Image (cartoon, rainbow, N blue to C red; front, side):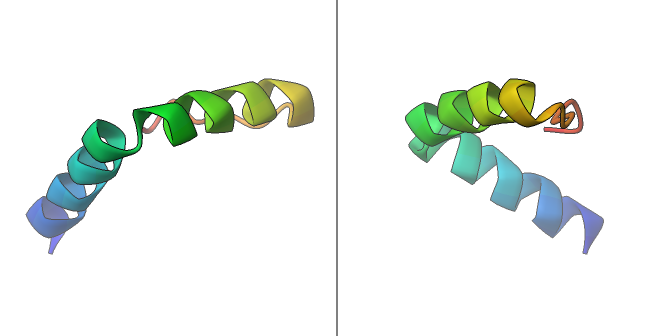
Length: 37
């Protein structure tokens, strides 16, 4: 299960890099940490 989650996040990161960057921006705006990604 843990490996599956890791692969899922990797796929999300690779295929939605723009969304990831946006999420990082929003995280800074809202003071939320996304370091686990």
